[in-house]
Image (cartoon, rainbow, N blue to C red):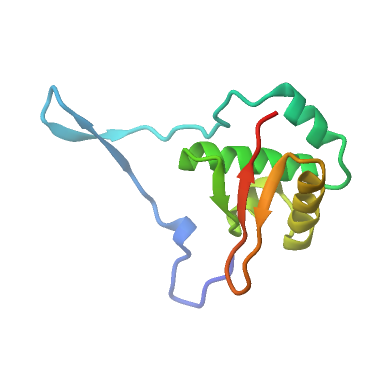
Length: 122
């Protein structure tokens, strides 16, 4: 990411996460946690997504990750999915179309707004 001279990109700003410790009655620094996909994810779902063309499998796993983070089977499509799936916008939409065609997701497309995707469990 390129920043104009004299500025710092957000990713370069050091951050510290805190958690409340009820025994001490204060907040203490918390070690960073590794990200994971919250399950259970049906093996049949993953198997069906992985045989689809292109990045459909990667897009599907990115959707499951976001669904776990948001604690909802319905997520708004953002640029974050491109980063997680490791592909561009066109590949994400092609993957979504493939997932939708076989009934693994339902996509609500609205003019002028981000698409809303519902992950459908097998």
